Length: 99
Image 1 (cartoon, rainbow, N blue to C red):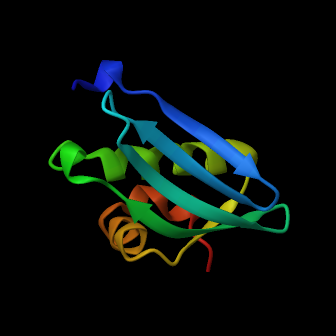
Image 2 (cartoon, rainbow, N blue to C red):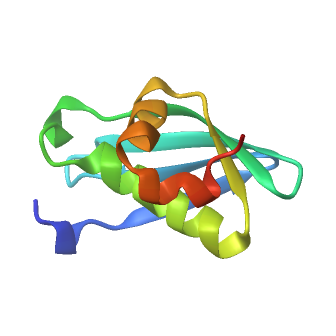
């Protein structure tokens, strides 16, 4: 599976949402979040099935969330251990990091 065949979709219901990437076999990689007011979101979970391992899918999902937050002027609270670790490795994301 190559990057140009991957399409990340945003699904939202009420204050909850997720970025999801579906594989051809129906497997889903996801990053879930909760909106807190109009200007903050909590990233609470990133799940990547084995079929996607080694393809940097988790990073792709997180990057999309950061791009969307930046465009909307929102801050991110990374409660998910994966997201929290990635923020430490990417100082260029500091503008969207809450606190």
